[in-house]
Length: 249
Length: 223
Image (cartoon, rainbow over the protein chains, first blue to last red):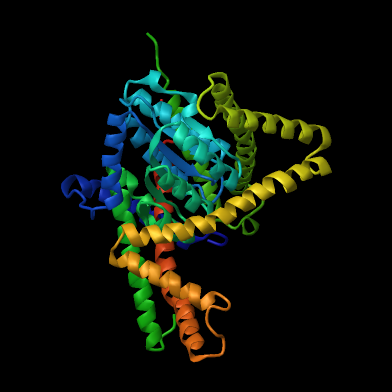
């Protein structure tokens, strides 16, 4: 059909078919994923923080809800719900910060939802989901005040960051926090590799839901990612070999 | 009998329908479809929804700022740790807001605040990043003694030596060796690795979006 991108729609359909396939397959053959050091260490750090009465902080980054950089923050919201459920019994509930007003509202809704599911509505505070600075650097400038004053011992970065993400991770290290960082930008990932104790590389941020056992769809979607990646890698290799022999498509 | 209509189902249905309309619009070239009929109306609806999204984002920014002030107001009221900083933030916030409303956002008074307060503070933080990264490099060497960290540090040093002016003579054999190695690392090894990383990120972003479109992830709340 003229004016319709059929290839794009076919790729989308492929994702959907694979997701349903792995969702059904997941009941018969459960997925086994490679161990992620950061994920295991995060769970231990959260347990220590709950026992010590310290706070977990999740940074959803400086990207906006309506921008192209919203995907890592949405993955961060999945992580936030899991963190809020895990720390329900803690004296100090989890705090989520962001540089975008709309994302702060989504963080509040996610926290309210997590506490309601856990039967602890009274734990919810609207100020637990905050916008702490509307620009990337003003956001980061607030972290050295927030981390020590709120008794934060677990500092998780899961959202869209530019170069300021390195400084956000470094502040966590300076205040002795367990620091785990993941984002979508390749250059910022390299900076996080140096500044965060546990950096998440590539798509590891988007795999957090599957590793934290959020639900079967998260596990199925991770298997879809792996399968499509193998198809793309196979295509690239095939193209390179064909090009080597002078065959052009 | 009290019937629960399930407000959360309505939110989920609204989010899914809106997401699907906007997503499908990306697969259609608007200038190549008939300008009348159901098909065109459908995609005009998409543009309308996107305009509403921008409007809602602006309202959300206002709510975010209200949230920011209320957090710091509580800190000042309760004299919590670091409350003087919160006080300064509130004063600066209202001062900037009033000046912006009275003189306009492009007035010299507001530009003065940006050029002589915000800009230098943000530039200082950028400068601080260089120091932080240098210290982080040393921290990686001392605390993470594995192969990957070794490769990371050696690569960073080679790129620095190959890029930095005056570190090695620009007319010797060393320069052509290190410079060539730096170019190979940046254009072949790093570019290839970055493409692999971006491929993984793109796939992750697609499945994250799909989960929201299927209402599996509901960041707008379940209840």
